[in-house]
Image 1 (cartoon, rainbow, N blue to C red):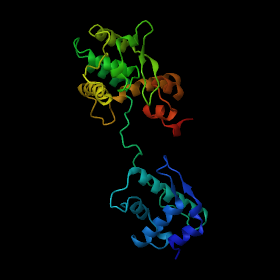
Image 2 (cartoon, rainbow, N blue to C red; image 1 turned 90 degrees about the vertical axis):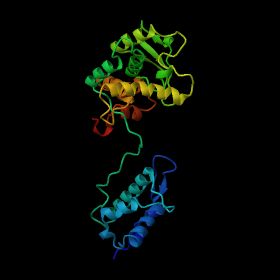
Image 3 (cartoon, rainbow, N blue to C red; image 1 turned 180 degrees about the horizontal axis):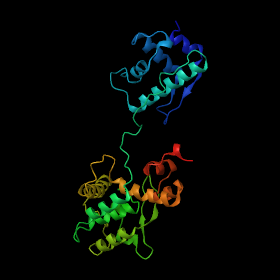
Image 4 (tube, helix red, strand yellow; image 1 turned 90 degrees about the horizontal axis):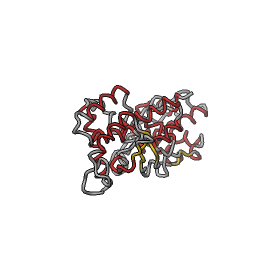
Length: 288
């Protein structure tokens, strides 16, 4: 019988390390893998490493923490990564010829839904819903700014003076995640902003009409304007269509025109290429 814990030590797994996406998720395999062996032997009753099944490993990955709480998603990913590395080393040592972890999948590390880019047709429908008549200009202005790549953090901070119709651009202030930038207006957006500007006071925000200056309240106001337009357009049935989907569409257009993720990052004000790729749903693994 190839005892699990003994086998782990034989192939010197104690010296291996797994580093996750943050310092908190970094964990030594020398500490983690013996726990897997102990769990499988004592809880699952599997003492022979050759008899471990995928269900056995999943049971350990999802096992409650010592305090009885369910492990966080980051912990689930770390445990799975440790198990995968351990079984790979067992195969390399000639102890196993199979891997019970090979088909295991988990939810994305991100607990937040990622907005998918709208299609061109969905944008046309959204525009019509954002401006149902000549009196609804504020919602249309918010949509126009989103088409210019503005985030819901940036939209309520745009002032009339930030728009340059002569150059067809708007100044966006940026945030912790976005860099300040000049963003191009779409033809539809330019017209929508021009109509709305005639109704605005020069020194007041273009679309934010709240009394307070709380960042959360300002961002919620912009999100609400876009969400109402999406709902009116009948686009909220898809759970991945969110207020950020309009901005994602703008980024996708840049990618289709240039084929360059770095151009998307500059247009969206992203500080990393990975964040730009995520917004436009670009999969690096399929890139040639």
